[in-house]
Image (cartoon, rainbow over the protein chains, first blue to last red):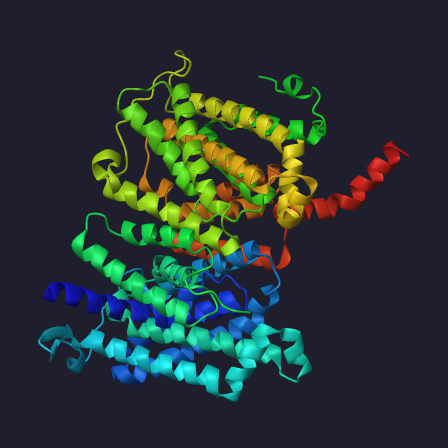
Length: 287
Length: 332
């Protein structure tokens, strides 16, 4: 029984991390209608920023996280302005090819800069070990993860639902022409939204070094998971990916724990079944 | 050995042009002029066949697949397992591989017709990954990461043994590629092929002219899977080895690159793309593979942004005015 709850807890922690990284992709795929397979590259960038600052400069872990966000957001902003925006109207095939190309380049670039091996990480003392809550021992790092993701999600909800910028995002993605007519600078809103999504991916990459690991193949290794969260959850919503990420996180952890000989089969099978039952995702966006 | 007389007789909408005949004489020229490269050229032809199978479903029917290697690998393992367990006759092995892949393609096609682009992407990706995991975990059947070795491939037609220089493998691959090309060329030039293009351009309007879109997509996806299976089986038989990466995502992605590099929707694009890609890879192979991936990525981005239509599309644009002049000159 304790085992089951432990697996559930780990699954939720893992799932919330997946959600944090994928939520930006949900926006690009669902709202901007861009299939961005390179999303994991932004997460990897955040991861490498964290690792570099931690190990080379000895910066405290908590301080590296906002920097990981900033670096990935900046990279996202620049790439959106320079390349992505040219392809918003292109076919999905072109977008897929473009983002596969970008993924390959990021993998090769990271190998060149950091070498092909897994990055070692030393988490700060207070994140190692276990915490005793309600008769259960839970990893403090995973607890911290869940906490951060809850905070970020609340902040994101506030940003989108309550602020002026959020209103501009919602208006722009619903009807670009009408929004432009109302004086919203749609292309600027798109750039900033893309940057926000990339930044969240970077934050997730930095937070997840200990859970997901970090090596140059990261963008390809986890590409499926991010895509899965969005496709299964329903692109363009926040609730959908959240639900999907938690479900997938739990199933993946449980699958690896209880039936290790089947491995990742569980998650891919689950995905195909879910896509069959809900071709448009668990939660369909009203438009 | 000469192929020209076989192929010139009438196809409704597709008479063979001199350039095409010349194209098909090139590999044969390589056979005599560059005997040291037979192995490479047969691999190019196999990859070309594989890319052609993707062209059927992507270039003609417009289905974006990220898991086409599933069918390639399925074919490779089918032929490989047959040969390991004593059925070494190559041609029946090809047919068995085609049958298994076609069946798998037929089943998967029902998932394909259900969704739109994004769902299709995910389903093909998921199926590919599932097969990869299955082959990886079922090491007692497939050899897992070590690959399937110990294949005993019999003599071709009971006469020609597969030799180290790759002569038999070369001619075998060439004949299979050419025969399948003739069939597929006929297929895409038929009314059926035309209806596929119609689906690609705007599937919603096709039912209005009485075309059952789903049935057509199922049919072409099955054919594409079967051809991919044959390509996989060819690779297995000619190299006498099947490895896990014949099923991997990297292979599916690479295949997309090859096809787009050559140009989609014209069959020859697959062959040209395979040739250019494999020669470049062979040339740069001495360098760090990471660099190779970097340049491939850059190439993809450049193609998408500036050179849509790939090599053949570019050539067509360049040669367009020239050809038009010629045609006008011939038929005033």
